[in-house]
Length: 324
Image (tube, rainbow, N blue to C red):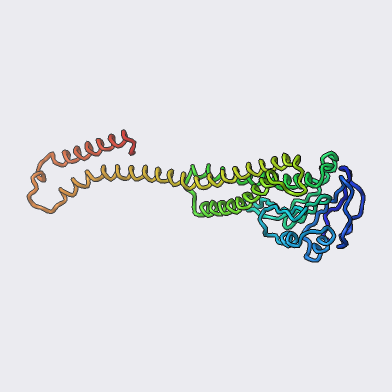
């Protein structure tokens, strides 16, 4: 049995009791006493023993063993079943996901992790250092783990915001190349998936705050409201990064159009200047015998004077209007 930790608490104090998950139904525990069981990627047979021992609903066990569930919370009689999605950032841009399912009863909480690299051992130690909080029961432990999971979203949003900001600054200097464009679309795809995870997490937390659910003390809803605020903040930041990435291409396109416009104006200005000597040379290059100015002594110098004057005037004019 992949038990990460199993401990019994009475009035917030840990008891050194060996909890054997052998599938034998257990008797209810005394008031202010509960078990906290942490499992990591159990098999179907192992979860079946846990189900029989704690009287878990078969449908909830089936969902807990499916690592692709979306976040949700459901009541099964006097028990509560919840699913949360964990996330972590790798290589600066790739988000990987895991799942943690919870079975919550009056005198127990069982967490089942799949794919999550963040264990709850440190969190357990922190909670055990505050016996008055643990004395509030399993619903407080559920809040603490959910808060732990949601806090794991912050490094992801921090990292993606930094990446988006660097790409935005680079786009101002030069138009993004094909590799950068592909990178932007990969990031937007990652963010869309992340948003699909955070959205149901927000709905789940809202239900924990607003709905009348078994094993959730109304006085504990204020704790879940804090988790809900963190989820909403993460959702807002994710949408902000998406908007930044969408604006990068648009802004870069506008800047590139402006640069191309400047180049077009410069080319048009030089083409207009060069058109003058080209036109004059074209006229006097025609092979007609009787062209009046051909035999004029000062014709050559006059043509050059006209060319230089007109070209100089055009250059000055284009310079003043910012085309050159």
